[in-house]
Length: 113
Image (spheres, rainbow, N blue to C red):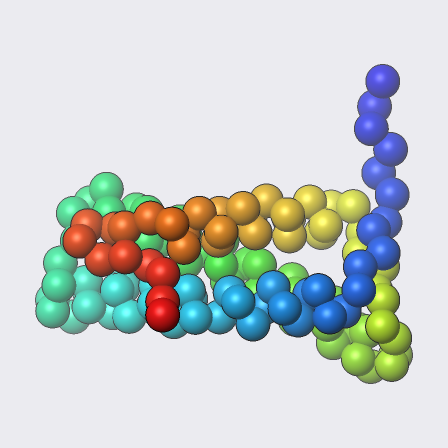
């Protein structure tokens, strides 16, 4: 039987909390990518692929969060309805981002203090 694809009602504060905790990871990923491409600290091909994957997932997550946070703020609501497809994207990219806080790429941890 096919799973029903319903919108998800999400508290805006939850989206804002996820966004706030995700932004430092993107900053760290951008620093590592910049170091690689400027030659300051080259990564192996495999590590570069990990960096790009995590940076992509983090950017997708932040863009989705921004979209729904802005919708809620514009309408002055505490909750926002997120379509099934976008909610699925948010949950999947959130998992990739969460893993980023627990791994090292090369000798560089992605977590921040």
